[in-house]
Image (tube, rainbow, N blue to C red):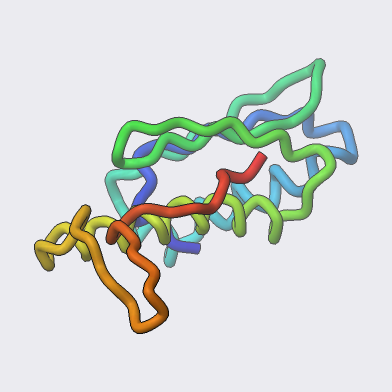
Length: 124
């Protein structure tokens, strides 16, 4: 797991409920040596919760924040949702450094698109 685009991760779950399994696994991956080496500045917190469903709050380096309800998700689904946002941020950063972010590109098919914009809708 890469924490490169993450500034803060908060994982909340009840350790005695089975629906917190994916949150616990996600926390374990965030605290692995490889993950912490990818971004030592990312703050990872775990808060025990006695009532309610488990969730993860992710704050990205661009200050966007996302809450992911993890009770019905696998750790792979949680990671995919976070990685989709992180990849888009990385691509936007690369396009900006290359000086083409926001410029128009024409294709051979007669389609014109803005560089760095996405037509995808964010994950729920």
